[in-house]
Length: 113
Length: 116
Image 1 (cartoon, chains in turn brown, cyan):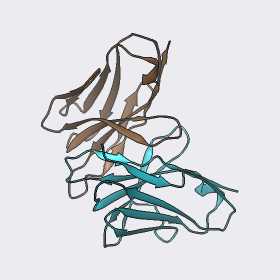
Image 2 (cartoon, chains in turn purple, orange):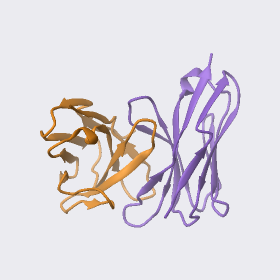
Image 3 (cartoon, rainbow over the protein chains, first blue to last red):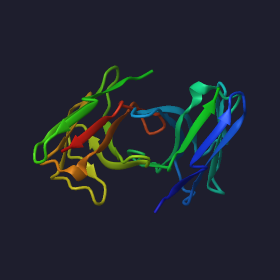
Image 4 (cartoon, chains in turn cyan, brown):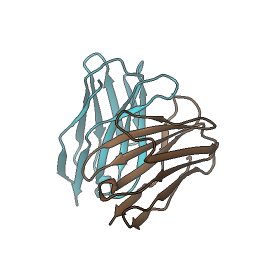
């Protein structure tokens, strides 16, 4: 059974700092991996999608890497801003007809102005 | 980007009543939609996969007679919580898949259900 864990559970950093969020999964047979952002009481916004054959994806100040063999992914946020404060979730896709997602436990990020 | 609308955003109901939550893909057709449940400070748990024109596929431990899912069109899926009880109080979120499994999922804004 796939289990997805995120470390740390919570993180507080001053504005401008670069930071790394970690995601690990127990079964390396994944189809893809996504990083999401969730604001309090809201739905999810997809940030980056990495296919299993890819090593990384970049969007603006965000860079996500994937090491499937070791069961790890990282989300790098450069020059953090207070507006980045949110919960960040990673999710692994199992593939198949519907590619069900298994979500991690999330990292609550607070960027202090 | 693609938009998924979820309604209502918040509902309070009495124990024993039924509540219907709608999930609409506004600018694309979604053959597959997903329903998740999220408890406070916890991650999302997949409840069921909703397929247009066919029965939903429920995850283990999810009561299909309690959580009725209907996906009658390519743009609308509904989740009905029947005979709601306080333990059903939770945040429910839907997502819709545009295109194939290589595409990103688009999420609704969620529904906070409180059962008194």
